[in-house]
Length: 479
Image (cartoon, rainbow, N blue to C red; front, top):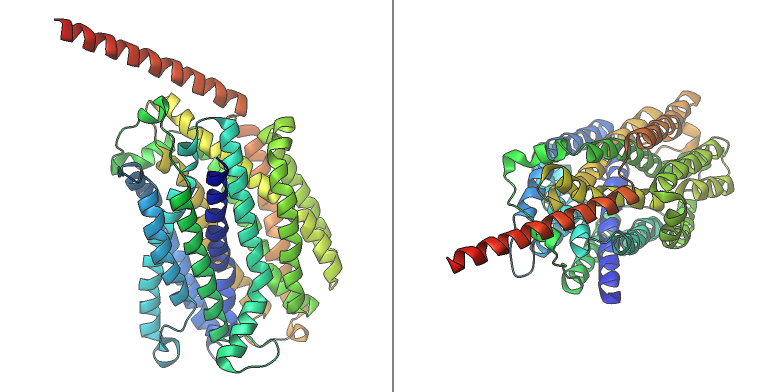
């Protein structure tokens, strides 16, 4: 099992390094390096609007992708073919996104927008296949809640290191590749620097997927055998009839959106409020260390206070971090402390949500009579993509209206611009977190205890049906 845990963790490491790069740093690349100068704000706005619109349209296809994965039957299993194909194509797509597409961004912006749209659609579709197949492996690795918690924990451990590791390396890598390929000096960030950075992340994502591909194994059980092919016309019905999945999904959407928006705008805070973009890298060090401490504590803490306590209590702790953020001013030290309080419960809240979604596979099977692993688990990446799409647009809106674009300096930011920026990075996310906690507290009733009872009922029911079928077959053969 150790090999499987490690392989899953490595896959999560590369996967979330990719996710953080796409959802946090692409908007920064567009506003600071791809389009600079006259008309840059409008051009950046077109690209980010395309990202938001395309993602909102494609989100409707995620459950269908989950249905395709559910209906896959190969010697490698249902998940691995999609995991590998998705990793290869999405990595190439990421590299192309962090480029000028062979100079089209300068020579012909209209053709660039068209080409970018095609690249992004292909990248996002295959990323969805990879995302859904990777995380929907959880219920296939075990039906036991404790074992699932371990896989979820090591997966989140890897993903935390991956996403926070990107924060540590983004500035050094971009500056290094800028110097190597553009001949710049100092801390200048160029297109070549961002392209080099994206290439590294693409390779890391692919290598992580290969580790999961070769190192994990689906477990067979009576419950998993009770699976029927999912018709595409029924995928949304499967999700809609699972009330616990729907309520958890709404709560998690608000939580994810608040976190991603704040996390994405932090680099702007260090650059335009504190006036020291290089100090932002320390955030990655702090959060990586806290992730190493936080994630392994999840099984211990959840056994004491349950997932509900982790989810709601963790959000309360994040709100304390937000309060401290508002008093940070231009102090990097206070920002580090506030971010430590803000981030520490995040991996555990994610795990609480992920485990609840995973358990809703059996809940849906118990309630509706059919088992849909990938369709059910597609809700989590669907929500993350939705949060990422909205956050990309919000980040650009915040940056443009606050005056934090191009070669602007901290002294160029007006008091009004600063208020707008604070509204997006702190005030709005705080409101979303409060609503998220209230929904989980009063609407999500699928506890660990209830899930264990559902599994027992399913096993008993399926075992009885199996005995009856065998008896009927035996009677027919005797006749």
